[in-house]
Length: 151
Image (cartoon, rainbow, N blue to C red; front, side, top):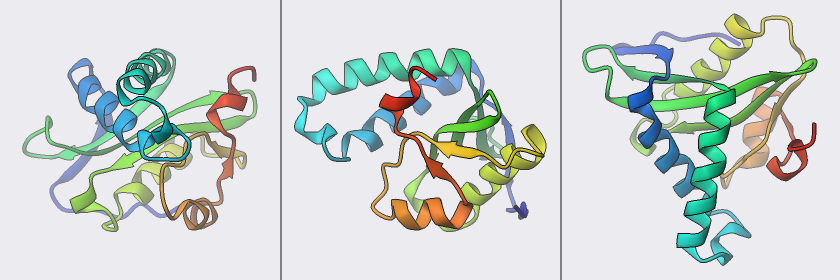
């Protein structure tokens, strides 16, 4: 996957101060997907935050940030190697900068730099209205988060 330069943007590994932003975006975006929004929001957010924090301890997260203000996050991708697969747990891009190449670049960085010869790329959460197009565009396979727990 081609990585396109976006002026004013750099990519780095997430640091401790990024975690509140990552957890908040992840849990809010996934709450809006059926059947999650049927759960009481306070209960959902509490349990989802715990799940995300556990994943962040065992996975890598790359963030797209402003090159002049590294605390200004445009998006992130959380992933890990599982046996012979690359498992992307979540990818998030802020609404105002969607469709500018951030998601493609994050997936490109992970697939080219972190796991260059891995054809098995799975994603475990798809909180998008256009999930089918997203999976097809990047050649991903969907593995729901509830199934991946035992793998």
